[in-house]
Image 1 (cartoon, one colour):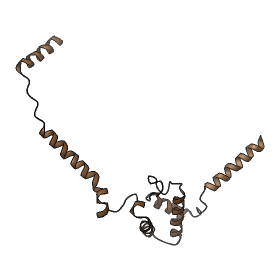
Image 2: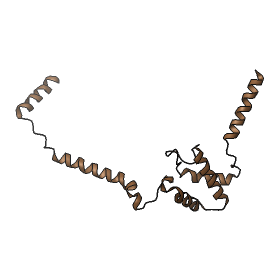
Image 3: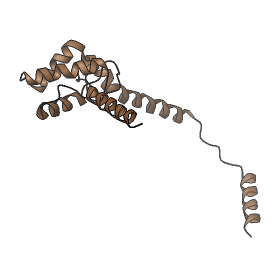
Image 4: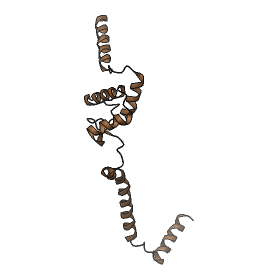
Amino acid sequence: MKRLFLALCLAMAAATAAAMDPDADDPAVEARLVELAKDLRCLVCQNESLAGSQAALARDLRREIRVQIRAGKSDREVIDYLTARYGDFVLYRPPFRPLTWLLWLGPLAFLGIAAAVWYRLAARRPPEPMPSPDRLADAERLLEDRHP
């Protein structure tokens, strides 16, 4: 039983070591990599940042970013390299330019259109008619009967 437990512990340690990134040796490079990768989208997962994704492509992209950081490239140069290669889709915050105007202004335009439609529908509705004197008298009588 002890041997089985020891073998299991060794297997877990080996699996943990394999899961660790072998290139993570310089803390400054890793900190910069993590900050850059937070703002970049995993191209496979699409709703996950490059920093949090475990997809093979994400690991390759992190490795490429690490290589460029070690080569002395600035953050802007690394981002420009990735956008030139993969397009603006790799960015979580795409730039504001004519191609992305709908992305940035679409929600605001939708709210404006919805408010205009709501206003038109509310203005078109006829006003509530005033109750007749007989109905008002009936309502007052019912209220008086309820609270003597």
